[in-house]
Length: 159
Image 1 (spheres, rainbow, N blue to C red):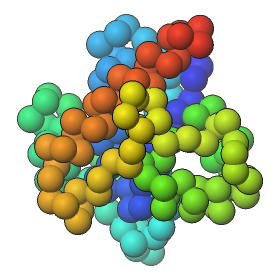
Image 2 (cartoon, rainbow, N blue to C red):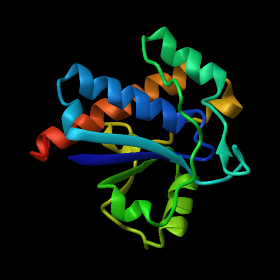
Image 3 (cartoon, helix red, strand yellow):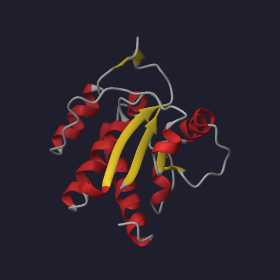
Image 4 (tube, rainbow, N blue to C red):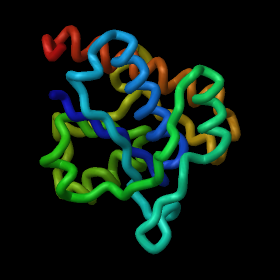
Protein backbone atom coordinates (compact mmCIF):
# COMPACT_ATOMS: atom_id res chain seq x y z
CA UNK A 1 0.00 0.00 0.00
CA UNK A 2 1.28 3.44 -0.95
CA UNK A 3 0.71 5.97 1.80
CA UNK A 4 0.42 9.60 0.66
CA UNK A 5 0.09 12.69 2.83
CA UNK A 6 -0.67 16.14 1.40
CA UNK A 7 0.30 19.17 3.49
CA UNK A 8 -0.53 22.89 3.59
CA UNK A 9 -0.72 25.62 6.22
CA UNK A 10 -4.16 25.07 7.77
CA UNK A 11 -5.45 21.87 6.13
CA UNK A 12 -8.73 23.50 5.09
CA UNK A 13 -8.10 24.43 1.41
CA UNK A 14 -5.20 23.14 -0.68
CA UNK A 15 -4.16 19.92 1.07
CA UNK A 16 -7.70 18.58 1.54
CA UNK A 17 -8.42 19.47 -2.09
CA UNK A 18 -5.35 17.43 -3.06
CA UNK A 19 -6.38 14.60 -0.73
CA UNK A 20 -9.85 14.22 -2.20
CA UNK A 21 -8.89 14.94 -5.82
CA UNK A 22 -6.18 12.27 -5.61
CA UNK A 23 -8.55 9.81 -3.90
CA UNK A 24 -11.00 10.41 -6.74
CA UNK A 25 -8.30 9.88 -9.38
CA UNK A 26 -7.04 6.60 -7.94
CA UNK A 27 -10.60 5.34 -7.48
CA UNK A 28 -11.44 6.11 -11.13
CA UNK A 29 -8.24 4.29 -12.14
CA UNK A 30 -9.26 1.25 -10.08
CA UNK A 31 -6.27 1.75 -7.78
CA UNK A 32 -7.97 2.85 -4.55
CA UNK A 33 -7.10 -0.42 -2.76
CA UNK A 34 -3.41 0.33 -3.37
CA UNK A 35 -3.44 3.70 -1.60
CA UNK A 36 -3.95 5.31 1.77
CA UNK A 37 -4.33 9.08 1.30
CA UNK A 38 -4.72 11.84 3.90
CA UNK A 39 -3.80 15.48 4.49
CA UNK A 40 -2.40 17.59 7.32
CA UNK A 41 -1.55 21.15 8.42
CA UNK A 42 1.79 22.66 9.36
CA UNK A 43 0.10 25.08 11.77
CA UNK A 44 -2.70 25.05 14.33
CA UNK A 45 -4.55 28.08 12.95
CA UNK A 46 -7.55 25.90 12.07
CA UNK A 47 -7.36 23.55 15.07
CA UNK A 48 -8.95 24.61 18.36
CA UNK A 49 -8.82 22.57 21.58
CA UNK A 50 -7.82 19.52 19.57
CA UNK A 51 -10.73 19.88 17.12
CA UNK A 52 -9.95 20.80 13.53
CA UNK A 53 -12.17 23.00 11.43
CA UNK A 54 -13.92 21.44 8.43
CA UNK A 55 -12.78 22.08 4.87
CA UNK A 56 -13.31 25.75 4.02
CA UNK A 57 -16.67 26.11 2.29
CA UNK A 58 -15.38 27.55 -1.04
CA UNK A 59 -12.93 24.62 -1.29
CA UNK A 60 -15.69 22.17 -0.40
CA UNK A 61 -17.97 23.76 -3.01
CA UNK A 62 -15.26 23.63 -5.70
CA UNK A 63 -14.76 19.91 -5.05
CA UNK A 64 -18.54 19.33 -5.11
CA UNK A 65 -18.75 21.04 -8.53
CA UNK A 66 -16.62 18.16 -9.79
CA UNK A 67 -18.58 15.47 -7.95
CA UNK A 68 -15.99 15.08 -5.19
CA UNK A 69 -17.07 14.90 -1.55
CA UNK A 70 -14.84 15.77 1.40
CA UNK A 71 -17.57 15.11 3.97
CA UNK A 72 -16.28 14.63 7.49
CA UNK A 73 -12.76 15.96 6.81
CA UNK A 74 -11.43 18.18 9.59
CA UNK A 75 -8.04 19.87 9.88
CA UNK A 76 -5.29 17.79 11.44
CA UNK A 77 -1.76 18.77 12.41
CA UNK A 78 1.33 17.22 10.85
CA UNK A 79 3.33 15.35 13.50
CA UNK A 80 6.84 13.97 13.63
CA UNK A 81 5.46 10.41 13.61
CA UNK A 82 3.84 11.03 10.21
CA UNK A 83 7.29 10.68 8.69
CA UNK A 84 7.39 6.99 9.55
CA UNK A 85 3.73 6.42 8.63
CA UNK A 86 3.78 7.79 5.05
CA UNK A 87 5.76 7.02 1.91
CA UNK A 88 5.20 10.43 0.28
CA UNK A 89 4.68 13.70 2.13
CA UNK A 90 3.74 16.34 -0.41
CA UNK A 91 3.53 20.07 0.32
CA UNK A 92 1.80 22.85 -1.54
CA UNK A 93 4.45 25.61 -1.41
CA UNK A 94 7.98 26.49 -0.32
CA UNK A 95 6.95 27.90 3.06
CA UNK A 96 5.15 24.73 4.03
CA UNK A 97 8.00 22.65 2.61
CA UNK A 98 10.35 24.32 5.12
CA UNK A 99 7.84 23.80 7.96
CA UNK A 100 7.40 20.15 6.99
CA UNK A 101 11.13 19.58 7.41
CA UNK A 102 11.12 21.36 10.79
CA UNK A 103 8.16 19.39 12.10
CA UNK A 104 9.34 16.05 10.76
CA UNK A 105 12.91 16.64 11.92
CA UNK A 106 14.43 15.88 8.53
CA UNK A 107 17.09 17.81 6.68
CA UNK A 108 16.81 18.97 3.09
CA UNK A 109 16.88 17.15 0.70
CA UNK A 110 14.77 14.17 1.65
CA UNK A 111 13.24 11.94 -1.01
CA UNK A 112 10.06 11.35 1.01
CA UNK A 113 9.23 15.06 1.18
CA UNK A 114 8.35 16.96 -1.98
CA UNK A 115 6.16 19.66 -3.49
CA UNK A 116 3.06 18.77 -5.50
CA UNK A 117 3.85 20.89 -8.51
CA UNK A 118 7.34 19.37 -8.79
CA UNK A 119 5.55 16.42 -10.42
CA UNK A 120 4.50 18.68 -13.31
CA UNK A 121 6.36 20.18 -16.26
CA UNK A 122 6.00 23.63 -14.62
CA UNK A 123 7.17 23.38 -10.98
CA UNK A 124 5.71 26.15 -8.83
CA UNK A 125 3.71 26.68 -5.66
CA UNK A 126 0.00 26.01 -5.50
CA UNK A 127 -1.37 29.48 -4.75
CA UNK A 128 -3.24 29.70 -1.47
CA UNK A 129 -6.90 30.44 -2.30
CA UNK A 130 -7.43 31.65 1.26
CA UNK A 131 -5.54 34.75 0.11
CA UNK A 132 -6.14 34.78 -3.64
CA UNK A 133 -9.81 33.82 -3.53
CA UNK A 134 -9.21 31.94 -6.78
CA UNK A 135 -10.39 28.41 -6.05
CA UNK A 136 -10.61 27.65 -9.79
CA UNK A 137 -6.87 28.19 -10.24
CA UNK A 138 -6.08 26.17 -7.12
CA UNK A 139 -8.30 23.31 -8.29
CA UNK A 140 -6.63 23.34 -11.72
CA UNK A 141 -3.13 23.32 -10.17
CA UNK A 142 -3.99 20.52 -7.76
CA UNK A 143 -5.45 18.37 -10.53
CA UNK A 144 -2.31 18.95 -12.63
CA UNK A 145 -0.07 18.09 -9.69
CA UNK A 146 -2.02 14.97 -8.76
CA UNK A 147 -2.02 13.76 -12.38
CA UNK A 148 1.74 14.34 -12.49
CA UNK A 149 2.26 12.47 -9.24
CA UNK A 150 0.17 9.52 -10.42
CA UNK A 151 2.16 9.42 -13.66
CA UNK A 152 5.41 9.57 -11.64
CA UNK A 153 4.28 6.53 -9.62
CA UNK A 154 3.48 4.66 -12.85
CA UNK A 155 6.86 5.50 -14.41
CA UNK A 156 8.64 4.43 -11.21
CA UNK A 157 6.80 1.07 -11.33
CA UNK A 158 5.08 1.69 -8.01
CA UNK A 159 1.61 1.00 -9.47
